[in-house]
Amino acid sequence: MKQMSLGAAGFERKTKRTRKREFLDEMNLVVPWSELVALIAPHALKSGAKGGRPPFAVETMLRLHFLQQWFNLSDPGMEEALYDTPMFREFAGLDAGEDNLPDESTILRFRHLLEANDLSMQILATVNATLTEKGLLLKQGTVVDATLIAAPSSTKNSTGTRDPEMHQTKKGNQWHHGMKAHIGADADFGLVHSVATTAANAHDITQAHALLHGEETDVFADSGYRGVEKREEVQDKYPDVNWHVAMMPGKRRVLDKSKPMGEILEKLEKTKACIRAKVEHPFRVIKRQFGFVKVKYRGLAKNTANLMTLFALSNLWMVRKRLLNIAQE
Image (cartoon, rainbow, N blue to C red; front, top):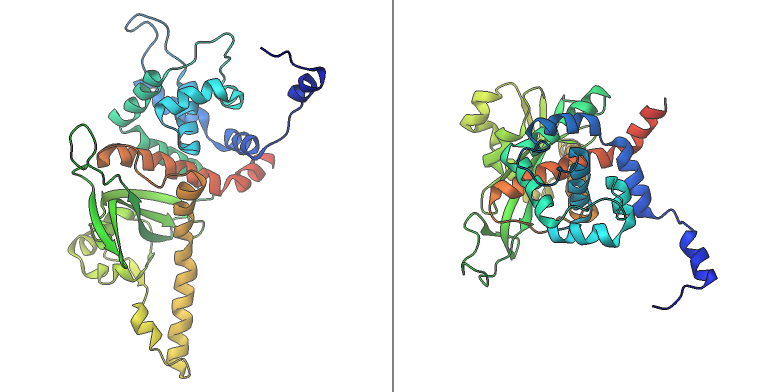
């Protein structure tokens, strides 16, 4: 091995505050670790329960699970990243020189623990409870929307078949194969409070009733939700909700804006569009910031659990500056 020069050794001691480090430092401060550990600890494997080496701390495994979501890492990828990236070991509280690092099987079992006990949904609820307590999640209005998540369409696998829970749908002139993520978001800050998933060919309107928390007075949606207020499940559960659904694009194009009524309707549509735009922010965060553009697992259940965690983390990411300011007051 080539000996390191004095200049290189000096460079190794220097640290640059990279964007990745800033991201981890900020998220370390805003994630409610104690509440989430208290949520998971009763379900975790106790020390000495099955013999062998003691299990890793719940907070350590939770930090690794969140690193997987933030940087779109598979279980083997997370194990390798612990060896390659000292910053990740530092964030998880692990020391490569002294501690045994979790292998991919350990990371896998922790994810299965969360799935088996529906803890991902409770993680989202716990994060939202923290945000509500700090006055960042208001419940007077909700914006609903859905996005397509791609799934592998190839049959070159051990079963020779596609995932039976994923389907194809046509959007515009392009066909997509995968699933849909439906969300209900706060109309003020765009924070997600409800998540539902379906195959890609399910219509957005079928999940509208599952995206409301029951305390809102107004709901905003795009033109794909027209007629939602007439559906039986919506009338039964939310009879007093005011639905503000966008006008069909073709109908809006022919508005006569030279007349007072046409001008008023156009301004109304612009106002609704400004409010609806907030629901696009969580989609941008999980797809562009966290890199979740394709499903990781077979079946809706595992991918739904993954999405619950992603949206909980996206909520914290979107209001991290406000949370840090509140903590400094």
